[in-house]
Amino acid sequence: MSGKHWAPGTQCVTKHDHTKPKAQELAFHKGDVVTIIEAVEGKGWYRAKHNDTGEEGLLAASALRERGAIRANSKLSLMPWFHGKISGVQAVQELQPPEDGLFLVRESIRHPGDYVLCVSFAKEVIHYRVIYEENTLSIDNEQRFCNLIDMIEHYMKEQGPICTKLMKPKPKSGMKSAEEELAKAGWLLNLQHLSLGDRIGQGEFGDVLQGEYMGQKVAVKNIKCDVTAQAFLTETAAMTKVRHKNLVRLLGVILHNGLYIVMEFMSKGNLVNFLRTRGRAVIQTRQLLQFALDVAQGMDYLESKKLVHRDLAARNILISEENVAKVSDFGLARVNPKGTDTTLLPVKWSAPEALKHNKFSSKSDVWSYGILLWEVFSFGRAPYPKLSLKEVTEMLEQGYRMDAPEDCPATIYALMRSCWELEPGKRPSFKKLTEKLQKELKHLGAV
Image (cartoon, rainbow, N blue to C red; front, side, top):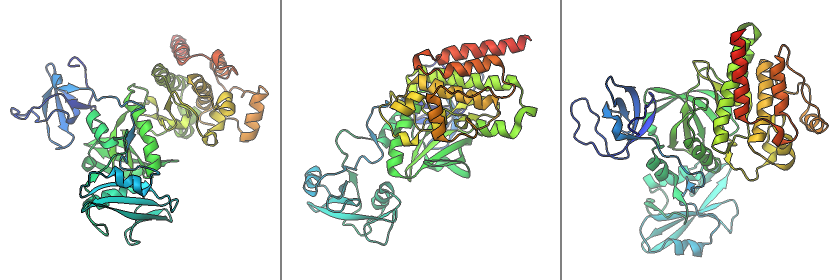
């Protein structure tokens, strides 16, 4: 990898120890994560900042490797100590041989909805009922917690009403600690280097905040609920596999109060708002085509990685300071998805086979892309104006398709219609869409 060029802001992992640096060099241990500040004149050296110590200095490109991708099927757990529905007797067996402070959490069989904290102490296992009421958890009715992760973190620091501080989690067999795996692959960031600012967005799973990490502007998605945070680990695993100029870049993850997903900051917000606030007077056709091409290229890359987005829409496209459109929110993305909750589907963007039979593929993403094109060329209007969700579903089955937006080039409308073929196999691939849009842009330049 020494021949690779690392862009400023890239996080890399060090390959070996370098504990006796010369003047101006950075000290590091094997496996440390550093952030590239800039390439240095002359070959093969970078100025970088150490993610733990915050120190800056020089290091050789040959000492760096790319961060590892996390396999989507690796059983990562934010709560490796959570054993689900097991009995008290099974919990006692799990906590053998006895060791002070060894612990696990299980679901209460006697009191459904509550949990039990099981702690080994003085060669016995003591069971503490964790009562869940009004969205909080408590052992003693005095100290209340938002979720299990917060509770365990607290009692690892303070003994409180329990027999001993929690010392050592007993992992459920087959589960790996998300913290350890993310750290090993180089994706775990340091909470101390993160400062949070204003809220810049709100997803259905939590707020998106503007922040700064090691001097770099970032966007941070915070997911507090442990169950949702656990589900989002799948999203994060997918994001560690991808790197493309038209995909919003994952910078890393912080495990604290659930999950903080730290991403590159896109200063111009989402595509719908960008188009609506500027409109026809400001934005030329060339710019619309460029946005459409950016998205197609990002999606072509995702398709090549066998990743299905499932929620492609202009609201999930973000615009950078340089007016580059990037695909974001892999919130519903799954590798080769199997089954999902159809009640959450964005009906006006979903392909008929996704609505009817829950079938998702790159071809259903292509259908959504056709709707996105319509949004772009109508300057951010909501698709199927004046139609209810029920009417949209019924009319699509009868063969209805939206008319072209006002002043939309005929070639682009033809492209939209090709994305809306009823048979998925007849729709173009993202590669084909990319080629056609490149041709269109060239043609515009030649006129």
